[in-house]
Length: 210
Image (cartoon, rainbow, N blue to C red):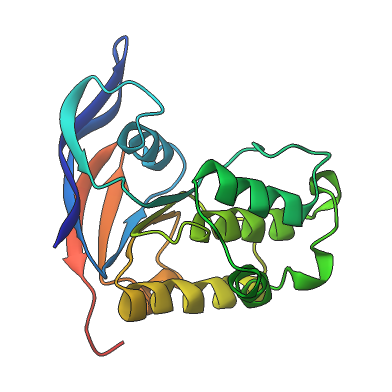
């Protein structure tokens, strides 16, 4: 089942072409990785998909009935505690989250012991894991994660990969993730698209033997 369809997505700022004619499809239970270095256009494409920036042209058909999002930037109240952020995220999404589920999410991401720590006191790795925890609160049918591995150490990155694979394969969650390289990502993704200069130059299925 298609959860996200992107067709001819383009972003132009004056004479500068930031993203050009990008198209791909994300299915239920699939992990799709957009791979590209700095200025490849990954974040702009994600923001256009989420309708956070205006697209010059193109079509985005997104099933946003249960959407979990993690994007770069600091968008949490710095004086709130980690547990307060997760509970307020549930309220904003009109989700009644049981104490057991909340505890499980924090345990999976190694956040349980710091649940009462304020956001301004979190390390970059802890903040990255909090963003993923907030994205899982819904629970989501689609996860959109932009540069989610950037601030994670090897242990944290491995744990997140395990969680994402379980979300996709056991719960049928469709996952769209961006990364500057395939390192580590190829272990969990089903499909990856290579971005260069805002263009999707290649899309490949990953071997099912992984």
